[in-house]
Image 1 (tube, rainbow, N blue to C red):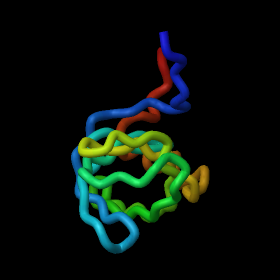
Image 2 (cartoon, rainbow, N blue to C red):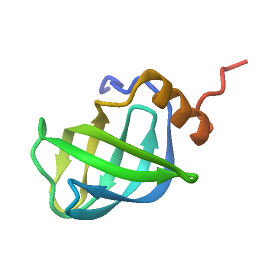
Image 3 (tube, rainbow, N blue to C red):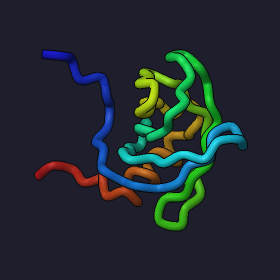
Length: 101
């Protein structure tokens, strides 16, 4: 079985995202650490892209590293320039900050 590398919970969340001020795409899966972006054209793993999107009215702007790429389908990215406070706020807005009982 493949090892889980994600460090935070994730949720299905659909929102438009702008990549590098050029390409509009859609986030379909989001966490405080990264996202899956649905897009036909995908840069190779290791590429750094700049993202702009909004979560529940809260603007998010961050650099992200492409972790894996599925040409014609999309790519998984890890956010690289969010502060710990911004990550915590994103988790809170997404409802992913709940501590297990």
